[in-house]
Image 1: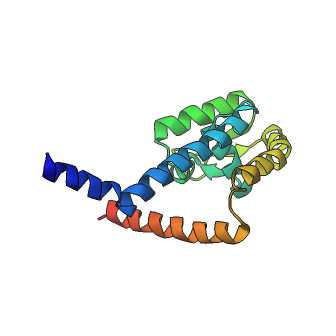
Image 2: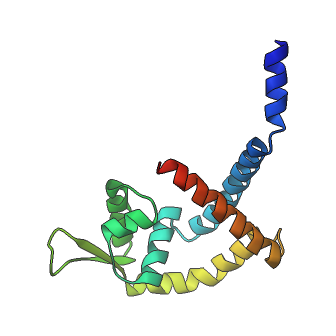
Image 3: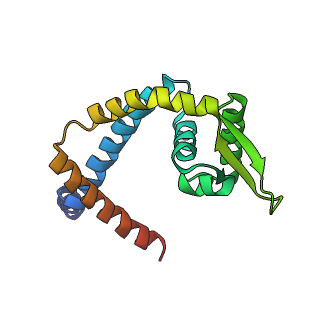
Length: 156
């Protein structure tokens, strides 16, 4: 028991493990708060992310939407179907390649986001208000550095 216990105690103080735990807990809490805000508007986070992408980037092939918000093709089809039923987006076939389907935000979707976004933005600002602007910039740089390194490990 002695050696195993010492190993565990040593690991528990390891800043890598501590950072992992702190970052995971913070991310979960932040996402929960942001998600609660989206649900008020009748959208789940994936639907919100899809509409936001279409709002800012214009018409997108379904495959590109999936890549951008990290969804499988089956999931993106489901999300697009739901948003289409709600009248927030429209689908169009590519004129050049019938296998490619585009999604585009509808006028109703644009109106919804124009309504939602100022309040959602305020909520995001409230969620992030634990840091000064300077600290936010530092956090962005550090977390991005961490993510890029993790991505390079994943892609090896």
